[in-house]
Length: 228
Ligand code: SF4
Ligand code: SF4
Image (cartoon, rainbow, N blue to C red; front, top):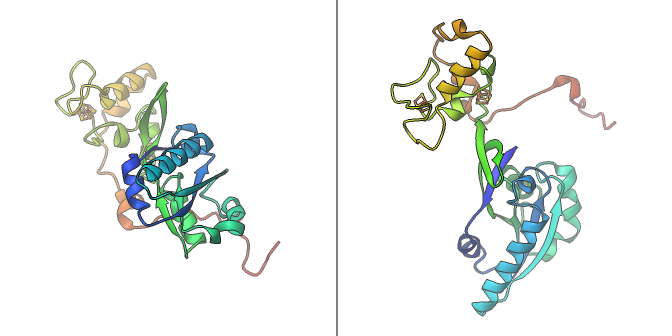
């Protein structure tokens, strides 16, 4: 899932300077699961904003709503009816949700209340960790299911650096060395010999450097002019 966390209240207040009536919109998918932007977090943020602005003597009306997914037009369409009543939208979606709202409502300022962090998941109560950087060409089959791109601080592709100690990463002893984990997994799978093969430099063409990426599934596309 996409993991995000709320911006500090002061940062959201700064963005809202000059606005009088805004709609705070939560998202019921990833950011709800990581307790950053679901219905409950919308309520808490809205109350905090009202209170802070009230104390400043500049009252702010913050109405609250949430949609199942901000990253699909079908779900945000439900907001269209009442949107003209607001100066701005405060999105508690990830960066994708913010952009979908801005695209759908081009006449409105859409302000991000969250900082979108990474793709990952929970490891214990209250802790989320990165697991994938969306490189576009997955190599987990060769690394025992551990991603060296997101989990090795140096993104090494051919084994560990010289700094791993006691299974911990030299960059941050608080995180496990990804290559130690890869080695142990491959050993358990009886496939250590595969790790001894030198991997050629990774082709990053499928990653971020070529600009916006797109996935096209021709079998799912609706032919132009066919509304069915
Ligand atoms: S190899 Fe690429 S696609 Fe696979 S988990 Fe790592 S970053 Fe994600
Ligand atoms: S200690 Fe391990 S995880 Fe950290 S940079 Fe070196 S190889 Fe990567």
